[in-house]
Image (cartoon, rainbow, N blue to C red; front, side):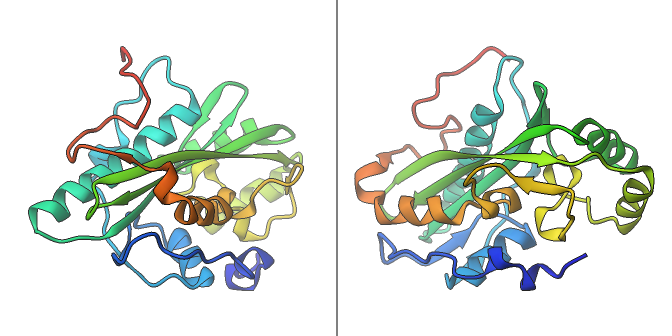
Length: 234
């Protein structure tokens, strides 16, 4: 395994000009997202949304729709909390899942679930989607976007699978794997974002921050629906 601090994906990450004078609040408890933000040079504090922000999957919801909704809900919950405390901040929230042969693959519940997920991915192409929400509490505006990266996983041998499961590195990771773990059985197809696979597409985040004024829409604090997404029957 490779220390994620030594990986090229943690180097030369873009750091954008902030659209407001608010301090950045990373709406995630993920150490990997915090690592990416730190590597890019963003100063930030962390606030974590409740588990309820990641529940209620809709039956006809696609992976991109789900991560957009979850990212929005995380940011919305933190914005509501900060508004009640008369606080302000530029919230950055995200949600990541993998998708393979029509199945949405989130974080594994346990080792058995992680094993079944990795067996599904073994030898197949799959997608990783990250929804990103940037929310200005001060201005009551936000923007939501989704980034897709296509991956190929080589066939995993039984010894490789057993060794990886024993490391417990799969815990808390969408698709039961970490690109930053240095496994040589994972490769990105095309020019997809490495940081997106880790959990926060830093290139797109920089674009959202740089163009926030033109992209963001006014939101009502407390709303749980992503901008432009209609309500669905679940």
